[in-house]
Image (cartoon, rainbow, N blue to C red; front, side, top):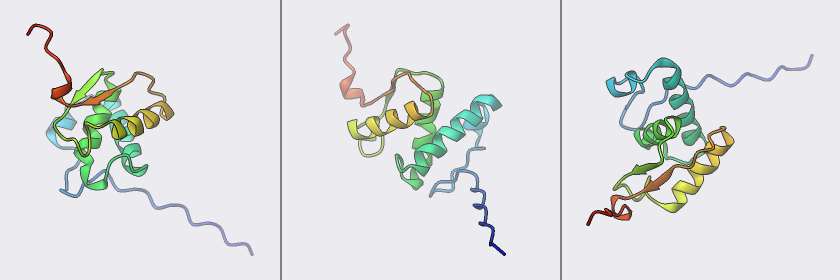
Length: 116
């Protein structure tokens, strides 16, 4: 008799190295349909190594900006957010997931105040 493949175990809810959970108050305020989108996109970033597992809050932050069609995400976090390599990886995954609007991941230093 042929042995059936064992189905993959379900993944636990997103949880970062600092035990951050998606049900914390800020994320819980997102309406449920959008929350599921944010969760799924954050999971994609983590599962495809666009964000390190311990940086779940960064993944949620980028997913929230993407799902809500923001143009720019400003951050002082040059290692995990505001850099061209991260932007390229996130853009590729966003396109793969059906999000066509570009999201710039940049630092406040790159945003010029035209009034000055």
